[in-house]
Length: 251
Ligand code: 6PG
Image (cartoon, rainbow, N blue to C red; front, side):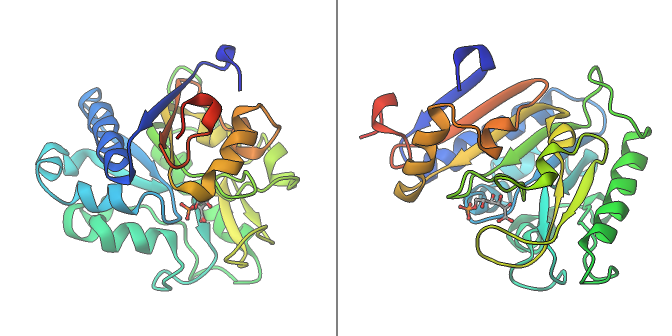
């Protein structure tokens, strides 16, 4: 990473502050759009506290739920009610209590052949394109208001793993990933880099001591998937003290 990448790193004390700061970013993005709002959620454990917060006041009453549509940046290719399913986690932590069902857009995993995550990818690509109203992304009109992201121990983000051909996909909006590089070792479906980039803001949430090693490599500019994910608007890294490398202020 270099300054010319137009990146913001925001250091916060701990996971609680991280969730509250992420919630404020989400509220700012919803306030900036008086029309239909699109938010792309992320899986993994990092966003759970944020999702729980969104279901509680004062956050809950400040979100215009009828106008917000919720998508997911990647999915484990397991049924919708499987505990590993990313959208299930978002549903059970806040969407089921707060969002109209028609505004929740999961990646289909049940209707597709489990041996072929590409089929689920094609269905989701179609859904995103109908929502957007075009099959080509226009930089002047981002698909998402906000895209949430996490980072894995190998530098992956969404389900874009180091060395995987999905990283170089520039035509398809969503692709199947037959093999995951880390647990859980189930096939995945992921939005591609240009699709994730089509947003006003991309917000990474990174916390905990076990993320410090990968963040040190990322902040040193190593060519890893999370360093290739950039918004066409703003890209913000929200990092807690435990994850923050020492040379950028971590203790
Ligand atoms: C997934 C993800 C993945 C995740 C990172 C970080 O399906 O696993 O969406 O990209 O965000 O692996 O995961 P943690 O938050 O659990 O560390």
